[in-house]
Image (cartoon, rainbow, N blue to C red; front, side):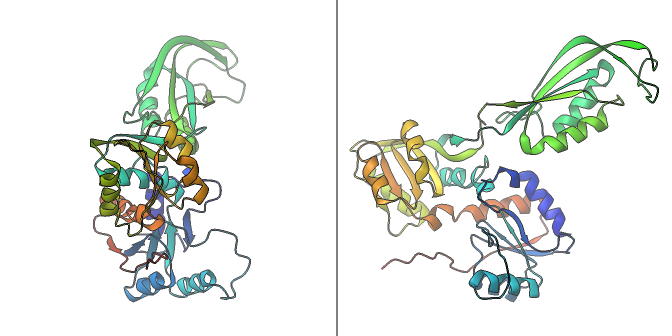
Length: 364
């Protein structure tokens, strides 16, 4: 298959437009028209990972962390990133990354952490905001079913674990076509009343163009009337981090041991214990210290993340058990998410997990 087919699928499942503004997810290197038959999946793109991809004849590296974060003004091979870019180009190896868009996904990195811990009642810790739109359109009754079907199949109408969510109400509309029109009903130059159905639904902002295209193609009118309203609703399933509950409460020492065992953390840092059992847990894979206030506000007894600073530990004392389990350790299961997504759609596509140890942190 072509690289663009894989990209289109990944973007439909984990939309690049969900990424944070500072991020650079998506296709980093490669021609979308390139034929591909194999991929190497890795958390990072390092020189060792590149060599591994070359040795196995991989057509593309699929990573969580992007190879290219900031702008590159030249390729003089004076930095490790520049060297890797030129090596990848010479060997015709593409790079695609799914980073913060995978973090906020409803089945993303933090959700995978919750799954590994066996947590129940999992919800976003910091739901996405300003990402939802309401679509309203007006359809003759004879065509409401095909229009609604087209809009829903384009991705609209999803609320949490429900889809095909919409509302209809009957009413009367009117229009008058000009000389250059070809009305679906009525005569041009004459005011025509029509019994119509007002149909409204919800959609993510990144789906707008696709949904409107589906609406216009399915609608019988020559000119389709529709309204789009921005919503202030928070998303139900998507967001940064998550919370969940242990099946049974644990004392803090037992919970710390559980974290070390599940995530393979060799040097856990944690705040002063609160003395309270842990039942509700907040999680954020990678650097999630900015979500400490959200974790405390959620009522969680513990917050597991990485890259926590000294004063953040101090500020959390006695309010929550703050646990730094390591950046690599809390994000390493991102490769499993990407593997499962791709193999579900392309079961015959050759996928390999990188065997390269890319954790840059070592412990004595």
